[in-house]
Image (cartoon, rainbow, N blue to C red):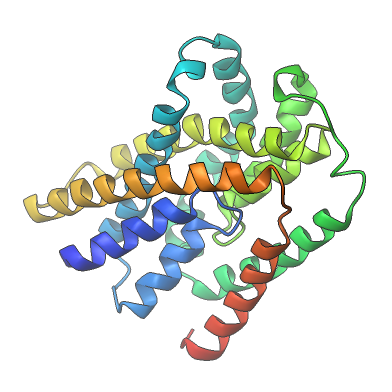
Length: 256
């Protein structure tokens, strides 16, 4: 991986991490178009730049996060299903799912259809509750939905948002809670992945991780601010259509 490729990948990650379009799916697809060979380092790079994007949320919501302990408790509880499934299926995810672009394409396509259905559902879009009022059962419910995103292309953000809407919280609250839930999720994923990899990287690879982290962090800040502003007045249909179109274009143009 070159510095240029690392910058492109990290910007793509930062811009897509919190949108319901799958950042992991985009990274897999962009790597294919940039002719980057999948390796243990590229898989770790993807996870590390995802963590950097998550840190953008910590920065933007620092006042809330460091003044309201309840948010941390809720996020940790909702993370449990994903943590268990991610731990049990770690080898399958890393060695099989992440290396199969066809799985990503199908997940993007059908995920787009599901988002269209969600937007048409009056029940899922009529919630007014705040995420601070979620019960223990509802937190696990959202966490279960997020755990589906271990499949590349599903989108962690989309899964958590749909789960949130299913509990009766508003669209903007579901989006915001998906931000908070991402924190323990990616901290655990990155920490476990680095532990398993043994940190056996070269100096050049460490440099690429630092560069990627920098660009991912700042592009994520831009993305989060724009997404929050957008979702207060609009729905998910443009993202759903984008997912479907992207999946079809990639399926027709990429050798998988």
